Structure formats: C-alpha cells, structure tokens
Image 1: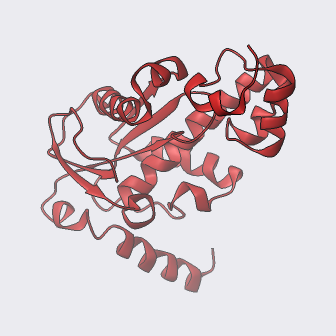
Image 2: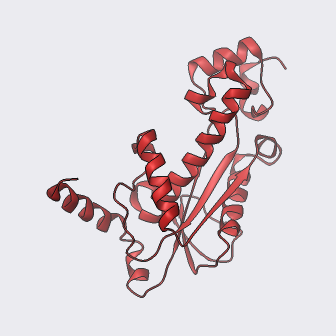
Length: 213
C-alpha cells in the first residue's frame, strides 16, 4: 500500500477504534462480538468474539459486508494470528426453530464469549443486548461499521459460517449454498420449491414458501 494510502488507512483505523481507545490507553484489552446468519433460510447462526491487543490496528479491518472473499480470508488469518483470544459460538437451524432466532443469536454470543477461554471486563456487541455473559456489555447499533473490535469479530464469524455453508454445498448441491450461503436468493427459493428442504433448512423460516418435505 502506498505511503499516502497507509496514512489514510491508519487515520481510518484510529477513528474506527474510538470505542476501544480509552481502555487501550489504560493497557486494558476488550472484546468485540458480532454474529452472522440471522437472516438465512438455512444453516446455523454463528457468533464470534475477538480480543485484540491494545493498539493492534490491522490494515483493512472493516465491516465484513464491505470486504471481498479474498480479503476476508486474509484478514481472518491475520486477526487470528494477532488476537489474544478468539471464540466462536454455533447454534444450529434446529435450535433456531425451537427457540426463535433472537434467543438463538443470544445463545451463540454467550457460547462465543465462553469459547474465548479468557475473561475481559468489557465487551462491545453489535446491536444485541441482555447477553448471559459475565462482562460489561456495550451494545453499538451498526457496530460492525463503527467499532474496530466488532468489525474484527464480524470477519471471523463470516469466514467461519461461509466456510461451513460451502461444505454443505457439497452435500446438498441443488441449493447453491456455495453462492448464497443459505440466504433466500431467487435461485435458492426456486430450488426449495422444486426439491423441498434439506436437513439444514430452518423450517420456521421457510413455512411461508409452502415447500414439501
């Protein structure tokens, strides 16, 4: 990256880490948490928790929705290499059907925090409140675009879930999971109507399509 671009990127990351900075200035690490997969018709909801060292500003970290697949993979590796801890929480489509997506999402967050293996005093969370974790929770609306640690967690969660759905595409090739990762694209809905649901479809999400078993 040219020098001027690096300087601009550094300024962007300084602004993005505004929420963390008061803690970092005191030498305190904090966690960021985000989820991927609340809206798809198939597959799990996945949450990630990431604890990065103070002032560990990784070039390119941003809301995962703004990044290419190649960049996501690169950043996922770099985040994992630099992080003090990374945790993942997975809640299956069957549990989503049983307890609803909001409760399933909160469970995924709690499992991701537990999977960190270390305790932190403060956690920044994208939008969701009232998590069953033993840390101060600071909910930030659109946190994946506004908070550095949450953005890092969004990358880890997306790479993990997308990789799983690509594996599922090999088992259930008719639905195009390698492209839609479970979301309700036109092609996916047409395949649902033609073939009916597979094992990982969320029955509570597809009932309005009146597809057969």
